[in-house]
Amino acid sequence: MLLSPSNGIYIFDSVKILQLCNKVPYPEKDGGAIAISTFTRGLIQAGHSVKMLAMNTTKHYVDEKNIPEEFRKSTGLETVKLDNTVNAFSALVSLLQGKSYNAARFESTQYAEKLKSILLKEKFDVIELEGLYLSSYIPLIRQHSSAPVIMRAHNVEYKIWEGLASEEKNPIKKIYLNILVKQLQKFEQKAINLCDGIITFTRNDLDQLKLMGCNVALAHIPFGIDISKYTPAPPTDKNSLFYIGALDWQPNLQGLEWFLKEVWPKVNFALPDVTLHIAGRNMPSHMKDSKFSNVVFHGEVEDAYLFMSKYAIMISPLLAGSGVRIKIIEGMALAKPVITTKVGIEGIECNYGKDVIVANNAEEFVKSVVYCIQNPDFTKQVADDGRNFVQTRHDIQQIIKDLVCFYQERINGKNSN
Image 1: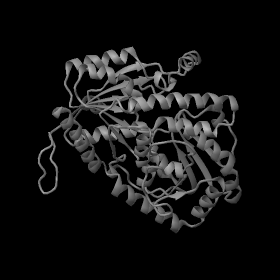
Image 2: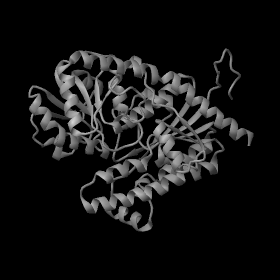
Image 3: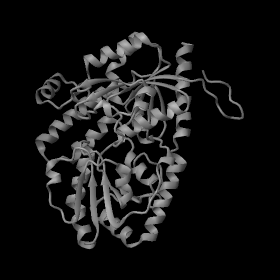
Image 4: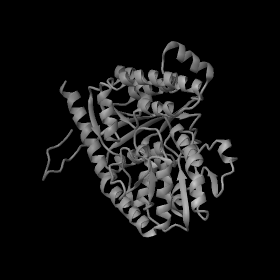
């Protein structure tokens, strides 16, 4: 229940939330895991109750013995193993049936049975879906719960694949990707109106959902972080760039390969003393084995914050995508100057050229990197302004208040029906 405001401040009863995830949010290294776990911790710290049911997929498999006991207990975490390996035969079947293969890879009888068991045992105020691919379970939820179903749309999924298709050079692969885009778009357009409410990380995604015909309650509530956990430190290597991101996510891989081919050779020629350090989970072997001058491929690193702290300037050369780039927000929180594209900074409502440097083609990227290396005072000011922006606009405590207010409006709407 939403209690009456006192001095303009709303006071909430504790909300009991069932959080459904298509991955275990540990280790907290990639943007998706961080987006889920930070949100979950914020709710618990604010006095709300969270029960988490997560898929433990082959793509992001986690040894549950490595999950902190504190997190498992506080969330009542339960997991279901799911083989979501890309399978050529299954992809062909989905293609012939006109169904989205992207979504089908997250459909599991075992997960549905576990979800049903939880709903029969406990009553929840809100069912939270972490992303589009949990929407297949909405009909089951409706059978066993009257709680409002709210989706946190981390991205508009079909837009990611649309961007990948537009950049694909192989004509056969391009045709196939365009078919996937159409099937995923059809699935997404239907799914968004099965919910009682949708939260987007960016205003662009909110506007896109409206264009897709979304007629349920929408709210733009940015990604939040606990700024106190991000302590800036001067880089140990001032003549350095760094990249960090999950390289099993196609937009990351596509953008990084573009940077290495189109941008880095020119930067390396202009700044032969500068080194590029690249870290990322599931780095493909062809990238690890490639021979680029002054490029160090670290693979997956144990401590992402330590890696980011060592080096001077963060690059995020994204060409396609949707949602918000959480690693960019983390870089800014660590007072790292960030050079990215307009796609990369989409959804982060900061000042271009002040809080972050935006470069939209190879020539602009080269000029930006060279200027930042050669003008350390300017670069430091960008870094300081970026951290101040994150501190002001992405504080988790305020964001949790906005989230719970949205929950309560949906709960009250359900109760009044």
